[in-house]
Image 1 (spheres, rainbow, N blue to C red):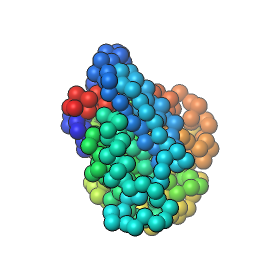
Image 2 (cartoon, protein in one colour; image 1 turned 90 degrees about the vertical axis):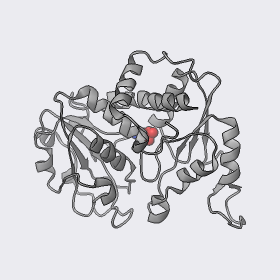
Image 3 (cartoon, protein in one colour; image 1 turned 60 degrees about the vertical axis):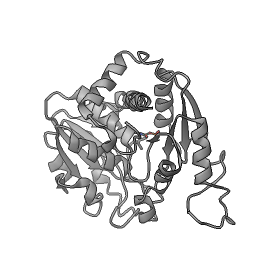
Image 4 (cartoon, helix red, strand yellow; image 1 turned 90 degrees about the horizontal axis):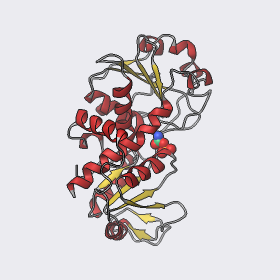
Length: 315
Ligand code: CP
């Protein structure tokens, strides 16, 4: 693996999942692999899981880790080529990426979308600029349109917890007061399309994801119908893609309740976290044995570790 920008960078998904599960049993087996190698983690947005699990994964591989938060710590970056930098930005990505590449063997970047400038977001201007101007591998720690570390985590979790060879997996939209990105839903959809799963998406009309991402995946506008016989219920809120970045409504009938989970095949509740209790999902579900959000979050470490391992083996 040269970079990990999208789930398409995983060459062999079943093997990668199996390797991640094996790392869980022996997390320090490859601690010599990252010796004298440095991971630089650059955050343009907040994080709990991604920051800590990726750092832990790197440390378990023997790497050293440097973290920088761009809001408040670093110079504000300019991404436009040819710009006259007489405004608020102080340093161009060309210099910044080249300099960081001298300090780090791998650079991981988190940069959320604007949700106001669709073209800029679709072009992944932050992530792609690092890829263009850095001379070392880049890992996507959640970008404008994707969260591939989360998606690999979710594929590992479903593989571990499934009780039938081809589980039914439902991605359900949920209400949220704020406009949220499409990244988690996009990457989850992409990786489920590569898995042996009966995968469907349910959301209210108007919340369709990018059709280039959903492709042939069935979309069911009736949530109760979609949840029937589900083995996994993956819940996420996102803003409208068509009416870009808008919250069209926050219909509370889409919140996941115990009654909705009762429609499933004793289905497992999944969420990438953080989750707003009693907005996205009721306490009764999140605190029930059906919820697997905590072991799911634990798998963030092993998803990051298997990706770092594959990149370290290629450099
Ligand atoms: N799921 C996830 O990416 O969590 P953080 O935003 O806390 O990193």
